[in-house]
Image 1 (tube, helix red, strand yellow):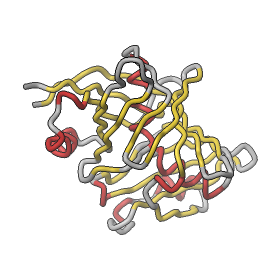
Image 2 (cartoon, helix red, strand yellow):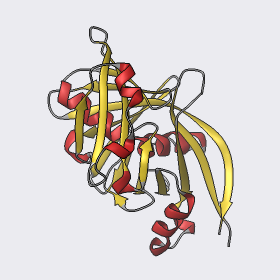
Image 3 (tube, rainbow, N blue to C red):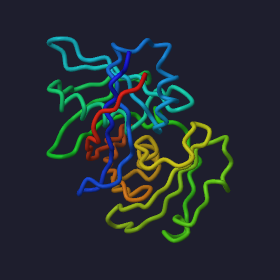
Image 4 (cartoon, rainbow, N blue to C red):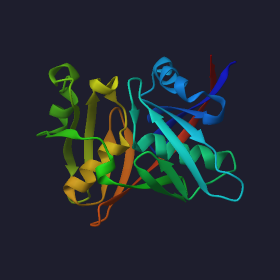
Length: 228
């Protein structure tokens, strides 16, 4: 039986360009044992399988898979899942992932999730000297046994950052926009940030001293594809 996959781009710029592709699938139509195979076949940096909220509730459950592994939390799948649920007429206040309960909110064209910094995967954080050095970095020069987050200030006073992320061990040589890395760098720097990652994706964050970070971004739909 063919399975519908909603294809989104999460963390686009204000004009709807760039963003990280995401596959979104109704979990009820997929055997749990088939999730990893499907995520691998699709090849997106993440695919999210969503248990829809039951009648009278505003909580959904998400299962997040890279092409290689299942993750307890990730940023762009949770933002994308929350946006997708609102688009289908079932907006939520909370999203349950394996790491815990993610708070969800919607403001104008931004969809936001609030998560704990320690839920995000560990990253080797590289403070790069300049934007030119950042853009010249070659993923092949970084060991593939750890996730690498490269960043540099564009405007320190305004909290504007340029970044890239390499995660070969997760089956993602370079990620276009990484919400969980945005959570980590926001907690590391202890301040709100506007991050431009990859080719031009935009991520907005808000830091809280109690260990929570809000991650927000724009989402667009690239339609529906089918997979067996």
